[in-house]
Length: 393
Image (tube, rainbow, N blue to C red):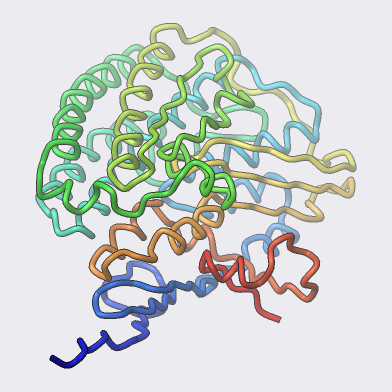
């Protein structure tokens, strides 16, 4: 008998323009037969120049711009920016405004997680779950529209507070919406943990250990599904999270199933804290006065976006325009986990592994990093390539 023929090696290129990609990104998967042996990603196709744009706009005008970094989590971007400006100005936001900021943030988290659940299910071929979750997502979008007047970019924040209040009619509508969504979420949990076909695409797929999650700097539900007990809402409370705290949701399996479970459990936690907020909303003004010109200095503002830690750096030169604003989004932190966990899996698993981090290209792609000095990294280039991370001279 002759020796068995070894599978040929191929490189499968996906993107940057591809019918399966909702946004442009370029991925190259090395495969032997159906098994992925290497994975690389090249991003940066949606460079919108937003950070540079902030330098020619006033502090107030930039609130409008920063809210449009990402359409799915626009409120947390506006809140992170506003908190940074308020820190520069040394002003304290009234308690009711802080509570309303938390309320909108948790409603937005529900919206984001339900949207992701549908997208991830669609990537795995489960279009029924996709249509059901997006149908139910309309409930929270209707609530956000009734509270803020907008379904996507809510514009609830102003520098120094918020522009909208919560009355009894809105409280009643929110209670009704949370009751409906909690019942629907129980059904989703049953599907993602019991459906044999679904589990075949998620259990033990894309597994990332706690050690690897820490080494790669993963954040948000992606990291918490691997046992990382870190959440900015708990470790560094902002808005009203000190008065209305949440509990960190984690899992230890580290696979795609765990990432579904963590996000769905986070929905339960959001339902709980939203009910507490609207039932015990503090009484105060909605805004406080804030100067047009910020004192000279620099600050960091961090919030927990639905995808993970969102980081804002703001620098003031004492004028009415910022000198520099830098935004680090959670998608940027989680790309390494996608590329490292892809190796060893079938090519057919790649869409769900990519969707597993809930990636956002448009909020991630604002810059290109050029590393001209090998000593800037503590890892060798071989180590970086092992995890699918490429630096370009």
